[in-house]
Image (cartoon, rainbow, N blue to C red; front, side, top):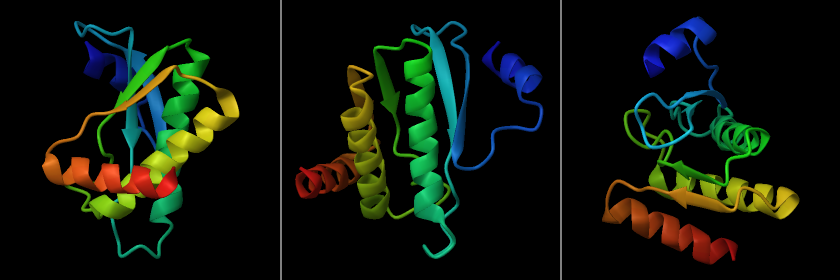
Length: 129
């Protein structure tokens, strides 16, 4: 049902660097926010801005729809080959800036694939705080 809803609401898909909202189907959540991060092309094609834009738009949608929490994977670091250490810094810097400006959502969680991703996010968080 999520796929049918997104196909109907967003026939052109979601632009890179943005996010869109759908119902959660049978998931234990109210919504699913779909984000499209950039494909890594060496870092000189605006990838960091696009990645930050995707995280920021998802956070905006969460606040607009009164979500108390949001969970993110590490966007663009799988098939799109964004280097994990750089992606972690962009993700956390964007989330921290948003939280400092808006104070919401109450909880931002990063759900990471493996110990390497966790280490990259932990190192980035240490640098940023």
